Length: 369
Image 1: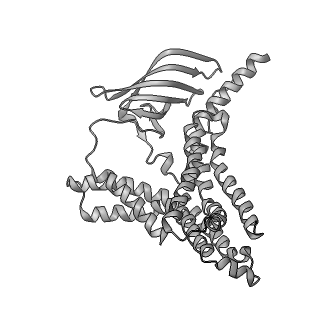
Image 2: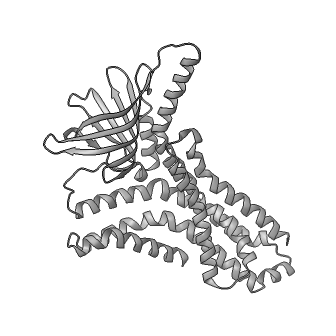
Image 3: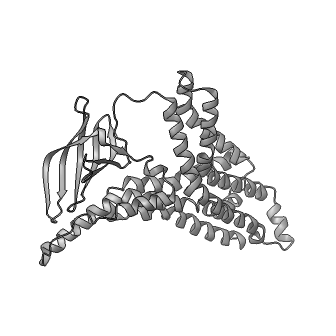
């Protein structure tokens, strides 16, 4: 029941925000809306399943404790661990289900949904540089390819922009700008990036900086990836990571001493920073697959300790725990420009915390502490 409720709530949120305006404006038929809903359901399942498992565990064991059933079971010689074992096993099985949904089904359905939604709406008159996606711009001769990534785009005002230039005849150049401005030249069909606070790591290993640096890209040769990294399956993310590993970012000339070590460190940092969003998404998809188990372990003892029959109390506690869990993901993604902190590993922290705290609380509850 909680699974159905959470799926409905999350589905309605997406429908009101993305589908309903298209239906009202006459840009979508009811059949197209039905297809969109069918594609959204598996994507919503990825979030609804862990939330439903936590909520149902809190409700069941809260009522179980409030009705003195736990006391009766203990008086009959049945321990809490024996009663909870089927629920724990169910939580482990749902981790497998979540893994299949998170790593394959949900991204595939989301991509199909985005494609359907794009077909339903009118094409945008102007090109927009999407946030958190890699766009490739090959030259006319395909000898040079530039990949653009920006963390934030607010009406053409860019933040944290990466330009990864691969010259297939020589080496690779990586450029990082703290801020920038996106301009479109419709006559020449070019996109102009006016980058500011720029650091450039050249193929010879020299790092230079500048206040301003313009980059012109030909939109006629733009090869936009079919999907963004947030909608890629696990295999696609691995392939994306391997693709950016093909050419080293900045082969350095042999320079001895402390200066050479600094340049090697700078090259490695730029390379890691550029691929960090992909690493974060990979670890996020895998780590989130284990949410059901952590929620189960912490939900059983908390339900017993709450000792309440009311459904609203259990739902409120579940939502609070889910907010804490997702907060680590938000912090990790916010730190994607600081690879030195290894934000991709932060995706695993909520699992470790919830499982460790849940195991301790369950052990204490089983001993009647």
